[in-house]
Amino acid sequence: MLPKLTFVLGGAASGKSAFAERLITESGAPRVYIATAQVYDSEMRDKVDKHIEMRGPNWQTVEAPQDVVGALALVQSDQVVLLDCATMWLTNHLLAENDIAAESKALVLALQSCSGRVVVVSNEVGMGIVPDNALARQFRQEQGQLNQALAEASDLAVFVVAGVPQVLKGQLP
Image (cartoon, rainbow, N blue to C red; front, side, top):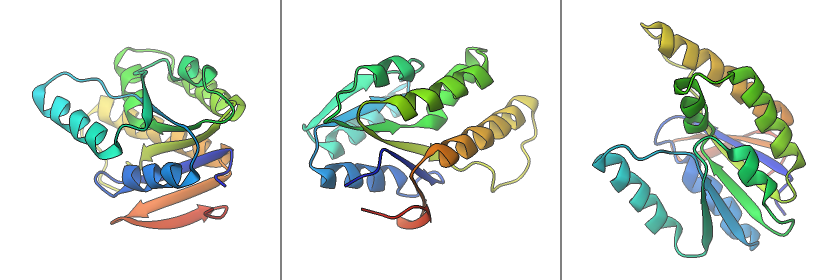
């Protein structure tokens, strides 16, 4: 059985979302997908459509680019949630110039108090070079802090590299 809170971390195109989806599918529980991406162009529309097709029809999708806390409040105790992804959620709040510390704290509390089990996907962004502009440096710093908070709050933390999951904390079901 999946633990209450699972954190799946990895780089871009590392296989983290596919791994998280597999964890949830194998749980056998009713599935909820909380989507945080916003579609601004045809390339992003194609990516979102591809993800929907890959997941299949047995998912309830909730679009929540910023209000993940509200979406989590509606989850039933028998459901398993995939929050994909914390990075897009953070980006949305950063670009809206919201209070990142307050929003991040509220997210972690909502994840911990959610009635169902939750798997959170996020990007590891701190393994590259120092960004050349202030916004990118702020994003990298905020994402690193959010990832640390999510890992600390989680029962299971997994780092996915080249499609291979590496357990950082806890045990795979």
